[in-house]
Amino acid sequence: MRHYHSSSKVLVIGGGIGGLALALSLKKAGIPCAVYEAREYKQGSGAGFNIAPNGMQILGTLGLADRVIARGSVVNDHWFRSVKGKVIAHMRNGKPNRYQQPGVSLTRAAVYEVLTDEIREKGVEIHYGKKLSGLTDEGLQIVAHFSDGSSAAGAVLIGADGIHSRTRALVFPDTPQPAFSGFIGVGGFVPTDAVPAVTSVEQHSLTYIPGSAGFFGYTGAGDGQMMWWSTIEADRPLGDAAVGELPAEAVCPDMLERFAGYPSPVSDLIRETGRAFRLNDLSLDRLPSWHSGKVLLIGDAAHAVPSSSGQGASLALEDALYLARLFRDCQESYSGVFDQFERARRPRVDKIIAQGRRKRDRKKAVSPLQERLGEWMMKVFIGIFGESALDQNYRYTVDF
Image (tube, rainbow, N blue to C red; front, side, top):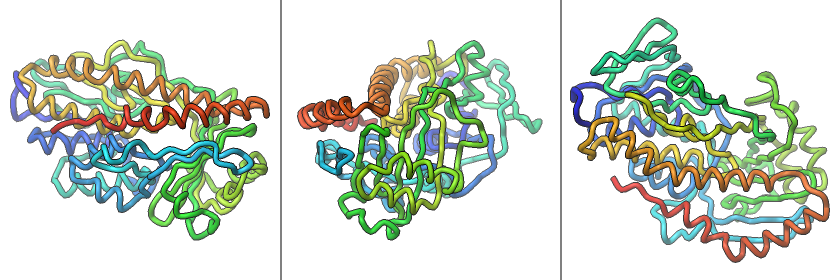
């Protein structure tokens, strides 16, 4: 980092996966930083997701891949099945011999805990209950003001505070707010021993069942759990009281009825759910820029990726390590670093967002005729192009 005082910190707003990974990447690069998270620390919360091999490579560089693998379930394959239970298509999870790490499915809480433990072990400064309320540029420093009356000064500020980014709202007040995509995500966690019909192959695969009632998927989640998820079309988003972690009885009866005709183990997974979730799927219009002055946005704050892409967390991890490398190696000012970061990252992000939107649209409920046509197309195109398409995303690396 050049052209400003070397003792100044990088202020990281947001203590989620992207913010914590950035702080650890900066620590590895020898750059001082501090993390400011709006919420209080809460252990064991959050839904499930998949970290693709490209994201796991970043965690490997940070020395955390083995810990994440131990908390999750390695994904070896993708299986596509019909509502009658027949295999439509199969592909490996990319070309495993080309990557340093596997893909892993697990809870967000598990990854959050691994990153937080490492933050504490490395002695990185982190503050909770710090809701950003304002920003002031004071020449050589930028000052973040928080709702509790405190403030923090740094050389630059990185907004890693997610799709509802307060940083983005302050820096780009005229940009559109996140919008409802027309889909609601529903899912849950199930003790693996409660669904004996699930095979060991299924525990280490992502299984997808498209059909006339909508899309249903399931996989292992580590820590003795399976997880399932579905994407339901809706005219309007759910209210705050109907989203987040919910009692299984508030979610599962409707799901059992909806997916009653789907093959085993779908009904068992829904029936044995211990923790359930409903989430509004949101999209963010393409921002004209990811940075202004001494502030840069990364992760979902800059480029919210559809959950159907399977790349949201992985792209945030890539952003974090790539930015830390630029700060370490670039001979330019912070504005030059920000320009270079955006030029390098935008094409990849835009491509994956487009892929995710196409996949999301294919999860709509369909007629029986559309269902059969879709199965035929999946069989043909996944067989020919599936692994190569995954490989284009998975083989990306950030040298550090």
